[in-house]
Amino acid sequence: MNKFLLPVALIVLATELMLAGPPVVEAVGDPFPPAVPVEAPGDVTDLALEPKLLIEGLVNPTDIVGAPADDRLFVVEKSGRVRIIDDGELVEAPYLDISRWVGSVGNEQGMLSLLFHPEYTENGRVFLFFTDVAGTSHLVEIHTSENDPNVADIRSLRPILSVPQFGQYHQSGSMFFGPDGYLWLSLGDGGGIGDPNKNGQNPYDLNATIIRIDVDRGHPYSVPSDNPFVESGAGAPEVWAYGLRNPWRITFDEETGLIYIPDVGQEGFEELNVIPLTEGGHNFGWSISEGTGCYAADQCDLFGQTMPVYSYAHNGNGCAMIGGRVYRGELMPRLQGHFFMADFCLGWIRSVVVDTTGTLMVKDWTRARTDRLGTVTTMGSDRHGELYVANLEGEIWRLELEAP
Image 1 (cartoon, rainbow, N blue to C red):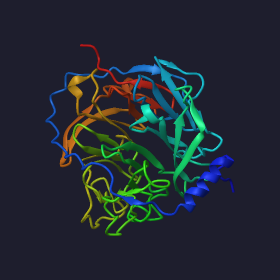
Image 2: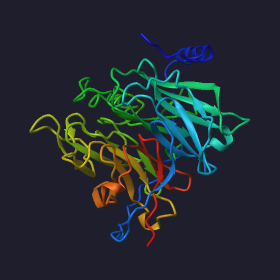
Image 3: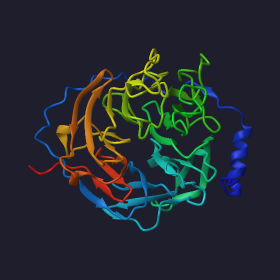
Image 4: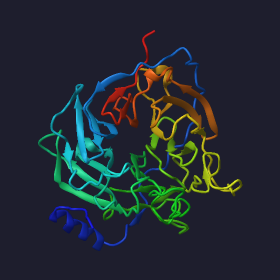
């Protein structure tokens, strides 16, 4: 069997981390900021998108992340490379290449996300999520080289969390830091039609969940004491929410205090869940439910489940929701607060304005087939809040409005 081929120094480090014992539960961070109401959307029927092609030549991009202190874009490639776009040009040498360790043969395996530490400009810390050649999911940390901001120091790689997988699908893997300073990470159910391992309704398993951990304390991390299952023991202490199939690109909107959780469906429905950052313990229903109804039966018990605020049926509308970001840039001021998303199969772009009670507006920006942006794999943003779309064809597009 293939194994994750870490350098000797990292194997020693991983051993030390295991010997350090279980994570330490600590009370860390300021109280949660309250969620604020979503503003009623204004009329945008007179607007049209005119996306701008920024770059070509990438290979299976899976994530787009703006550098914290400058205008570079970091683009994750499925094979295990991280590329940099600087001043509209693709830097020839990759920021990082760990393709010899990354398993990317499966459709939903590979390197899936990158995240900068909130104090990156001072400490150079970067977090990566990927599957190895044995199929195990890994969260690791690496530092940017002190001598070159376009190069990672591979010697600094530190393993933080590993989650065994039994299949190549539904690995999920998107991350953000909340205002509490903790890292939030999504994981899919691990694959198989209909969640055969029943991970969705098992909050003791990290698959099919969103976890929340403190990567600044503990060895290799600590668990915040206010996570929902720490005291009750009704789930793994790392788990913040569960009942998810493949939450692709969760995001946090600082303006409203809401978490947006798109979840790719199985047979017929895509869904978007929205909850306040303050509320832990949500069960989003998979695999009892899909979208707003039962998954595998005419009737099921939906009691205690959190229903999506937006959902669409496949039926020719698409096959997999690709999330997105809430727009907070300057190029499209009338679209402030719109959550943008795409569909993997049809390449359309839509935006919705939602709150925790439901959908306030849906805008389909795809007027014709020529407006579709290829086989969309991910969306991201730069430090100014402008939005970018990547596709399997290796293109990066910036969302802009058509000139009046």
